[in-house]
Image (cartoon, rainbow, N blue to C red; front, side):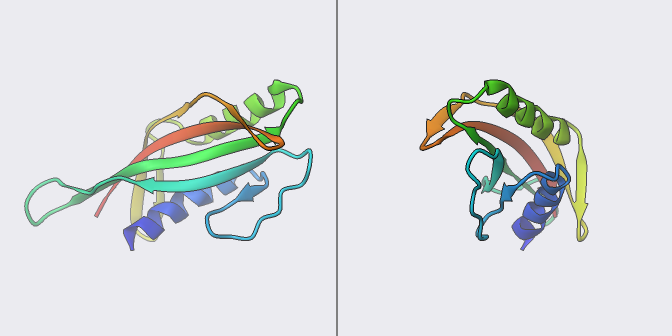
Length: 129
């Protein structure tokens, strides 16, 4: 249940960018020539802080920028920077009583997938229950 709240908190923040986004398990049809985002939640193992008390939930919120292939790389990098700015280290997001803290965010090497140039962004988070 807490993973759903973590996912919702992160997706709500991503949605503030106002960019076309393929959210997990939702219908999405990319428009040719238009940059869009794709999100995936990758939870890690839970860690008990102390016996019978808080559990730390951590993981990676993977956001990928799908820019048109064979176009200027500037627009893809610009969108990537918008995502990084929206998830700065120390940011606290709260959804239905669960606070998610951004630990770090970084861009990883880009690659080609079909007609898209993909720039992955890994956003490391933690939350407690």
